[in-house]
Length: 477
Image (cartoon, rainbow, N blue to C red; front, side, top):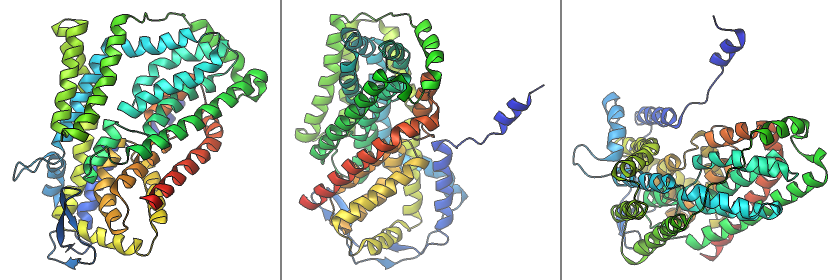
């Protein structure tokens, strides 16, 4: 017999998953094809983008093609490949995601990432203040390279006891990890699940806009480090200023009693694995810039690097395969979301309303300066991020529409990609629909409303940095 509290918990509203949101949007878009007038732009080939783009001012009505139930069912399939022509849509991106998932699984199975970060924590023990920039830098590297998120959850139980023992609090430890990785995602450079997918959907190489993203990453990381260090020092000098001061004795009893003090050994083999990890991303950038690589070649690179790590570490054939498959399995949901999100665009294109929406957007941005336009795009992405926290899902959902609109406003598509990833990364520092945020706060025993109180001044600072960076880039582009 269930208790009243269990009944209340069962009936408690739960925000739907990204899958439900995106499939609901497919249905909504299909219904819209019965209402929104069909139309089409004339198109011309753009040498820089190597694809056809709409020509401003050439929009004209055309015969409608409303989408029905069968079209809705086939939309996620069509998002991956066109069943009628067998032409690829997002299938290459989905395969790339699965392969890089396998690569990360192989790297993680060696223990190199865990032991490397733990080694840094051990080396700085007794100088815990300087653990803050070092660890936030390491986590930011993970965020900017491969979107490190769920992988951070294992580190909270290691870091929280150390920071509490040093006179800080659980909020400090949570901030080091959550903000460190989060600001890396916000300033993604080669993150396959944000920058690469968004650039692909926008029709540009992901290396376009790299300098601006490095600037945003550096400035936001510095702001986060200074903010966390100031808070940590304030708590050390006066524990009553902690946002979880009322839980001080309880947290000390819980975390310090449970802390085992065990640190994984950081071996020479781990150093080699981490070197291969970093070098793989360097080679990927070279391949895109100089070798004309894209999804197929990048997938091959990460597969080859996985095999190389396997040959060096020699875990055995079965363990290697299991690590790769399990890593790919972890990102299967991301791969499916990509197809589902692209299915929305498939329905819009088939229903001939994509160009109509672009026309409305063209009219709405007419007369807007580049600075105003890019900041409007940024805030649209902020709003969308609350409903679609998945970086890959939001990229495939929004970029096919937002990127062509940038052409009408004479703004580079790479700026739109940067606005998207910055907005999504910022929101996911506090997003209650993002499992990593809620999981981290649960482990750290930090109530969500107190995390918001801690974060809101920093959110303002980061927003100013991002908007200023986007505005300056739009002016000098």
